[in-house]
Image 1 (cartoon, rainbow, N blue to C red):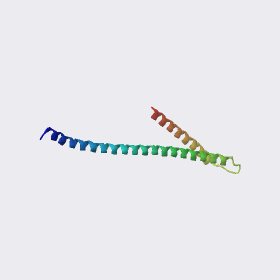
Image 2 (image 1 turned 120 degrees about the horizontal axis):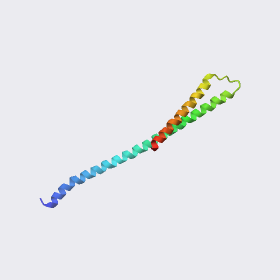
Image 3 (image 1 turned 45 degrees about the horizontal axis):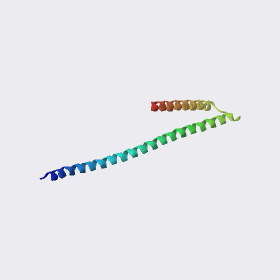
Image 4 (image 1 turned 135 degrees about the vertical axis):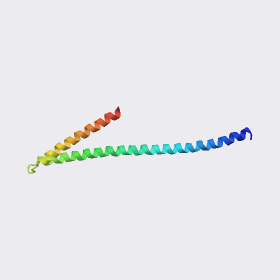
Length: 106
């Protein structure tokens, strides 16, 4: 065998291996992009859920306060307890989200 044949014989497996690794790298990059898209969608969903809970809580509080103002409505202690509980939950949620935000900044 001459030197050219040896070089060609050695370069063919290397070229095939390099090509297969290139394909593998492209597949990994594609999966990472899809993973990033799913993560962004999950974050958007969680934000929407928090906003929905806040909107629901605000509507519930407004309804309870409006019912309390009706002269003929006889609100029992459950209404007052529910409003206090809603305020407590809202405060805890705000504190939790603030702590998460600070933890993610630092």
